[in-house]
Amino acid sequence: MDAQINRLIDDIRHLENQLEVAVAAKQADLQYRIEGKKVVFENEIAQAHDQLKQKLLPYILEIPLSSWLTAPFVYGLIIPFALLDAMTSLYQAICFPVYGITKVRRGDYLVFDRHNLHYLNAIEKLNCAYCSYANGVAAYVREVAARTEQYWCPIKHARRLSGHHPYYSHFVDYGDATAFQSQLGKLREELKDK
Image (cartoon, rainbow, N blue to C red; front, side, top):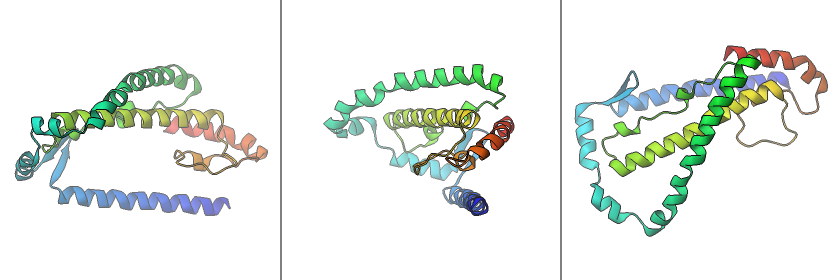
């Protein structure tokens, strides 16, 4: 069974590599390149995007009442997200060195590049920045939690888990006490090389 699982994991990695190649091809089709941390569109594409940008006042006037009414609930989450972000950073700064776990690079998860899209107006760019932050924090926290789980409790669940993190497939099987005792040290050691 372990050999079959390892083959499937290798297949997934192969498909992820194919996906990267396809994404790079699409990037070339859309005529942009990444220079350091900046996204640069070809001049004629940037100009065409400017023409597609919706003006601010008509955009605001077209926002449905339901969106205006729910906006405080959406944007009110900025406080818990910022607190979660700060506490996760503090947690890993204190605990990961003690456990010997390589720290998660927060910047790998918080990506803000949609402001480079010329076809978005100021409100759309603000919305995109908020979504980038919220989803980036969620991904960052998940990675910190995943490494913590691998350190303390790398055991699969008895029931199927929806949307598990990438370390989970290497955890020991539920109920396999011998594997847990023999693999725990190895699984913890892997966290030093992330």
